[in-house]
Image (tube, rainbow, N blue to C red; front, side):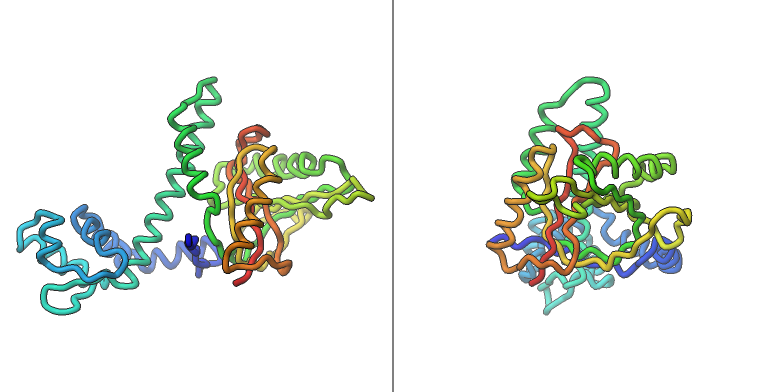
Length: 297
């Protein structure tokens, strides 16, 4: 049974703290990155994924390295605690090594997905399409319908809320766009993520409803007193992607079904969310949402 990757909660609650930590730890971080800078060392580490023991002779066969060169690379990886020597001539990846590779793979995949989405947007601007790119995005989406299990950290957000409307999404988005776009926030979706949700939901008796957008800001980001700033405590989520407004409701249904078939349970302790991946893409047929269903184990 497929087990989604769990994204750990970041220990840094602001970019300032992240910058300060990396500045203090710069030498050690560079040293760690250099230990994986050689393709043969990365190849060796990848071959150990899963925790199985591997012998010096097997590594030599995989890498086609001379004994002295292989011994040097193994020494570098051992010194950084990415692998350990179990006994003479036998090696195994460590928890740290396995965890580092998983984070690298996750970041690389997310980066490639954003790259494809940016390229699609550029092609749309000049009136062209790329069947290859569209096919690849579709293929990846089918393989990863549940994108991941995510522990959202505590968030500081600016809220834009439209109420008592037949189209509150458009009204709330207009408020958000007028404020955030001029500040360049739409150009940094990695820092300023946008989440939205019904507030309140429509009912048969009351077709008018509300929609609230949040845009995340760091602790040191100054917000005018006239704007509403909130703190969201975060929580555990199951996430699934969809593209185009017509796919939102069916995808919510698939996500709920997937959760019901897993070890997780839906809860009402934290907010259901729709993450707007690319704020520049407002085309109702192509914009991408990551749907966040609150869960517990």
